[in-house]
Length: 249
Image 1 (cartoon, helix red, strand yellow):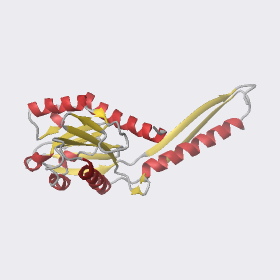
Image 2 (cartoon, one colour):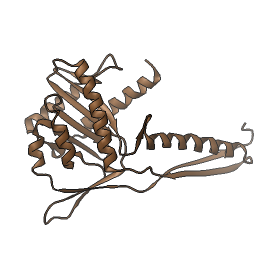
Image 3 (cartoon, rainbow, N blue to C red):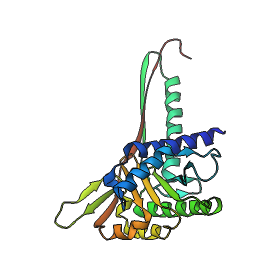
Image 4 (cartoon, rainbow, N blue to C red):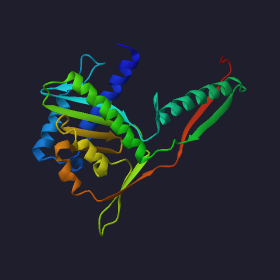
C-alpha cells in the first residue's frame, strides 16, 4: 500500500470513528429511535474495504459507507484552495524558521510567527462541493454496487469556516459554529432525488455531526426555519520557537 493510500485510509477511519463516538439523536433527522439504534450498529460493524482504492470505503452486512471530503473554500483542479495554501504556508514558514535558527548566534532563543488571512469561504462553495463530490461518488456507486440494501454517504467537512444562524419565530437565533446541512432546504431537495440509491447522509466536522434519512427529506423540509450562513473572517498562524546551543550544527 502506498503512503498516500495509507494516509487517506487513516483519514476515512478517523472520520468514521468521530461519528461513532459522537453521534447524537438530537442531530439525527427523519429517523425513529429504532432506526437510530440500527444505524449505530451498522457504523460500529463497518470494516474497511480490502480493496482500499475502490468503492466503497467501508462495508457492513447488506450495506456500505462511502467517505468523501467537502469544503467551503474555493476549489481548483487539486482540491480545496485553503488546504493547498495552508500546506504552502507551513512549508515556507518551517524553511524560513530553520534558516533563521541556523543563522542565529549560539545560546539565542529564536521565535518566529507566520500568518495569512483565511481563504474566502462561502455557502455557495460548500453547496457546489457537495454536489460535485456527490455526483462523482454516485457514478462509482452505479458502477460497483448492485445488491446493497443500505447505502451511507459520509461527508467530511474539512473546514470550520462557515457559521449557521437558525431563526424561529419569537425565539432568539440559534448559532452553530459550523455549516448545518439539515437547514439547507434547496440542497436537501436536490439530495432527495437520490433516495432510491442512498439511504443516509452524514455530515461530520469537529463541531457538528448531522445524520439525515434521505427518503424522509420532504417531511424534514416542513420544519426548516429561516437560516443564514456566514463565513468566518480570520487568520491562519504558525509560531515556532527554537534554541541554538553551543556545538549545534
